[in-house]
Amino acid sequence: MSKNALLNDGDIGIFALGGLGEVGKNTYVYEIEDKIFLVDAGILFPDNSLLGIDYVIPDYTYLVENQDRIVGLFITHGHEDHIGGIPYLLKQVKIPKIYAAGIAVDFIEHKLLETKDIKKPRIIEYKSHHTYTFGTTEISFVRLNHSIPDMFGIAFRTKQGVLFHTGDFKIDYTPVGPAAEYEKLASLGNEGVLCLLSDSTNAERDGLTPSERTVGTAISEIFSKLSGRIIIATFASNMYRMQQIVEASYKNGRKLAVFGRSMERAMEIGQQTGYIRAPKGTIVSGDEINQYKADEVTILCTGSQGEPLAALSRIANGTHRQIKTQSGDTVIFSSSPIPGNQESVNRTIDQLYRRDVNVIVNGPVADTHTSGHGNKPDLQLMLSLIRPKFFIPIHGEHRMLKHHKEIAVELGVERDNVLIMDNGDVAAVNATEIRLAGRVQAGDIYIDGTGIGDIGSAIIKERKMLSEDGLLSIILTIDPVNRKLLTEPTVISRGFIYMKGNEAITNGIGQKAKEILLYEFEKKLFSEHQFKQLLTDQITDYVKQITQRKPMVIPVLMSLTQKPVE
Image (cartoon, rainbow, N blue to C red; front, side):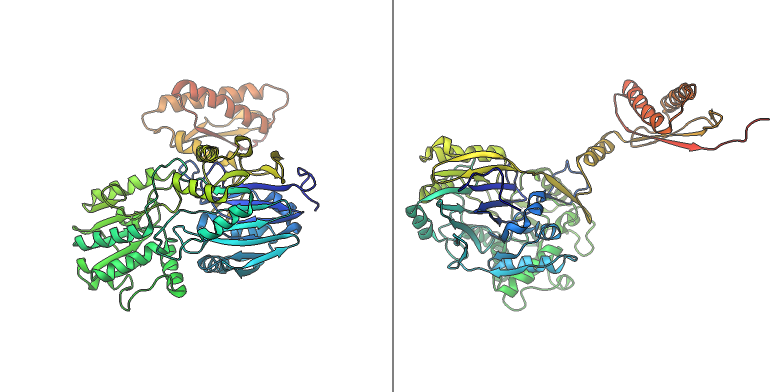
């Protein structure tokens, strides 16, 4: 397929299929000289409004239609909102190679092993000093700090100028892992950057982001003061935090057991890659913890976001097979709620208090977590070092992108040179200008169980209606030939009204349905399909009038033809 029709000769096209106006499903597209470079392929975890949906992925239609121009998928780091969509992408799009670094390679390999029916591309493990050339475009990497090891910004050197994509980052002068390559950022700034795309998640927050190291110190201090079992929940991808919990457990004479599938897998990968080092005998199996006294046990588990099926949620509601809460337990949340998850987290905390355990959450009293995303000062430093001509804020809800724009303008980027975009909006960039060139197809695709994209917004709407107003079914047994109603209508309610004690309403609905049917029978032509639609509409209006509710109405017609009377 030829180049994007929205772009003029010499233009670079930049757009997102996911990651703008939301925190998740980061998928960015760079079109440079007819070649397509993909950066990240993430998923979005749904909020409570998406009933029964497991994940949300971007609409990959544009990539399907242009897959012959894709040179590779470049991964900034191994978080799910940046790599979780890879199996779904590969089911639809031919990706020649995946470029990833360090721990992200292991997470992606594990993901692809679990996925059937896909052509697995070659994974190339890049290092900080590597460069790759595609035609006249050179790609290089800058190590930055985040809450997961091996996070890299990506630089594109093109004929038009340098583009820099930060990925997720924060400024951490005392990181747990390797230091960020600030000298490379300064060098890029001196070279001259045409366009910067930068993480906006914490653009609204003032003050410095606490270092990961201060959290490790705080956790170790908390451990030293607690008696009884410690149950600690964090993100399964936060290797540094997991290592700190291993160290705090060992230092305080505790054995550590891991619960939750994703946490067990992360611990395994962490130990294999050397990011998690545990003295022999520190980590024990879930079955062994009962052999130790309460003050000799640490339980590390999933569920820091209140996910209903995660280990901590099941411990909190008493349904976990192996762990039951005990008096004297302390539960530590070593995380902060992702936007949209506050309610679920609060519910889990409330259930834990009901079980009479102590709960410690991140806050002024205890530094049990720090964000992996930079606050305003961090974003200011990035902009000051890079000094871009054009700027596109990415990775954040709309208000976060707007705040990031103001930060850039304060630091000297011309207001007209900053583009706030939505998923699908195409920025055309060249050496002299940046403009909105139009749109490509973009949207949300819902993953429900094993189904991809077979659930649309109409089905979500129906689920919402069912959850709020319930279902009403009217069964009519008719003789269509002789145009007779053979029995009185049967009304069945599920989640709408309790049938007993509401006979007047159900009888009224049945009577209304009978009237509609007899009126339709009087017409020359009786269409079953049209009748069902008419019945649904009129009964919905009737029920709304008498109950102020709109249940889903499902008419059922049973056709029994009787012999004509002789």
